[in-house]
Length: 276
Image (cartoon, rainbow, N blue to C red; front, side, top):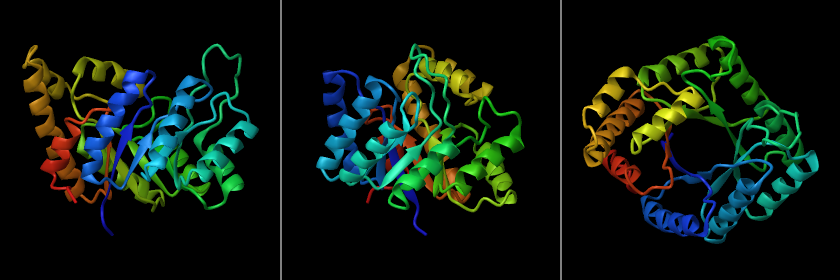
């Protein structure tokens, strides 16, 4: 089976950001990824921005997978959104638990396995459903095995494959895959990789989402001081080697978190010889 390579964007909140994303997409589309995904903020303007980006990409004939979570939406609102995506020709979704929008007074939390079940009840097998996986374990998980069991539930409810949270330790992914196989999970789990650009922002985000930044990696980046060019060049080399190891070790492909930037994703892609 051929490897699968995908790119992720987030929906811009401004007109300038939308214009920048159009330029980024124009450049990255030359790489011919298998599909793009677009992140989602339920119950607010971020969701509407997501829908706008999806509409524009589908009008251009681009294969795109919207991220989806209930948040503060009702069953009716979610059904209408699924119908809208179907009309646009969307064939793939990324189903996530998501978070409840603050200040809404809503306390309902719909887990990803419930969302997968809802999509299957509403849309049958029209959509290919991706879910999230956490090689370093979800920060709210009780323990390692319970997190793997929850992933198994998502597949049991109808998910087709998973995309992982980004990580910087290949052994974490390989051990996670070993434990998933032992648990009877046979669906493909695609590693997500995060290019290194703004390292201080990456550290803050990683602390919130449970992605570990190895001490040696932080020390190496710190050694470059304020030389941003050196950090990015080293980051391209490191993520390229990480990706090579993942692919050589049997990963079914890679999902790139682009942060709406052309570089360094394009350089890493070319280093891996993925141009088609």
